[in-house]
Amino acid sequence: MADEPPDLSSSKTGAGKESHLAMSDSSTIHPAQWDAASLQRQCDTTRTRRSGPGGQNRNKVETAIVLVHRPTGIKVEANERRRQGENLQVALFRLRIALALAVRLPRDLAQGPSALWRGRCRQGRLQINPTHNDFPALLAEALDVLQLHQDNPAAAAQFLGCTTSQFVKFLKLEPRAFVAFNQRRATIGSPPLRSLEITPKRVDTTEAG
Image 1 (cartoon, rainbow, N blue to C red):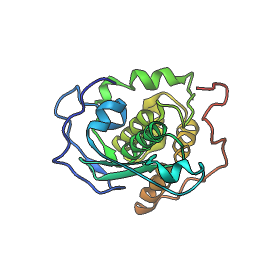
Image 2 (image 1 turned 135 degrees about the horizontal axis):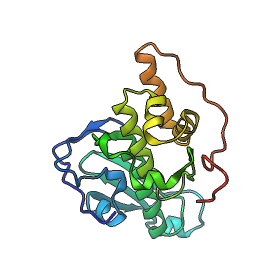
Image 3 (image 1 turned 90 degrees about the vertical axis):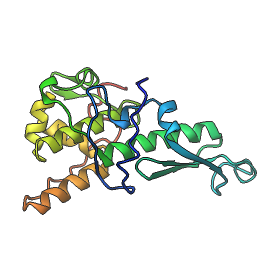
């Protein structure tokens, strides 16, 4: 994930809105895949104080981090940790999740799933913890593929090499993705998929990562 991110400044969106960005060449990757340093260079960073748990140190020191992603306008904040560096890492992870939700990029279906996805999908079963650093990139790929298959979860799952139930459970790991998916289904008259109770820690609990 060391690639320098492309300049997306001509394709701005407000937070929560999808941005259909055209890939300039085959090397362009989804912003949810960017490494922390590259992503932070595209952000305005504000350090501030916030009240809450953490003792007096949080009131005296600017430990909270606010990131505004300039190309998209997406804003995220982290203030629950006592150390500024830890809050920065949390904020960057939240930004990658937000980008995965908001930005859709075309993908070459002829290339099949990414190496990252294949490494996490074994014998039709996904193995991923939603707090793992790989999760935002996987979520972005799943949502890109779902869009390319016109919100057909069975077709998207078949392309990605997992079962439909595993694919839907994966979407439910990020509730905003699942809610948006059902909202799109409603606009075309399709019934919503049921929100079944699942373990929030990971799709397949046989692996810790």
